[in-house]
Picture (cartoon, helix red, strand yellow):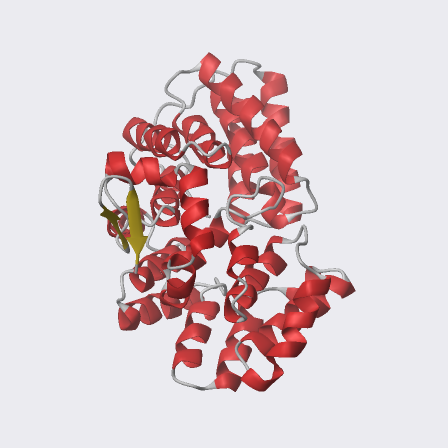
Length: 352
């Protein structure tokens, strides 16, 4: 995820505390495990100099929210820290946009989608130029299936930060969800040109659809960094990448591996595994990842359901049960239906 430092006043009279905050924010934007740990140190040092520096507490909340996606960290512990620092920030400054954004993201794991979207919308209203907050709002809309609204938010985010690969990656996913495949592939390539390689999986899906198995597998392998994984998880990720978009005759090998390695604590592995489960028709297991608070990045895994490859999942009983259980149907009834879904009668719905 990307973002720019807020453009309002510094929030502290301590010049050294503000410099520490800027160093922490820069490290946060690098999105690596080592840099995020440095970011935590900078923000805590800023707070030590000025215990009422709300923006530094917001910075800690944001770091702890993303930490499990990039480092060896428990999702539940990190999210508890994220909530703690977000609430401290709001106590000090009730206009702390980034803090409201973090609380909004946490609401997803409590199955409170309406509250999530409302909190994130409030955050954007408080600081419309904060691209981290705008990106997270757009991501939440996309994860809820509200692709048209999410794409619009991402277009505005890119206008504020056109050089961000992660913003363009998510814009490519939004375009893909809307069925604009050519535009999505072009945007994915722009993200890759900016040094963000996750969009390679979107190009992998396009290669899969045209029957180019080798190119598809190569793109998936390129889209994730296997080198930082333990040997067993690296082997599972590579097997998923090579087989899930490869020769259909070898799917039993993938299915066996998935049975033996159902869920891991590695978001990179889970991201590939969810796609693999969909590929072999294990929709119940794929849907079980969505919004699982014990798993890093499980909110992002929901995006698979809204893309063309997720059509069979959206039509499954497992997906319908999850949508009801998660509270996302309540959001649709109040905020408008997902682009791919519509109501049926007074109490039912279906997705295409």
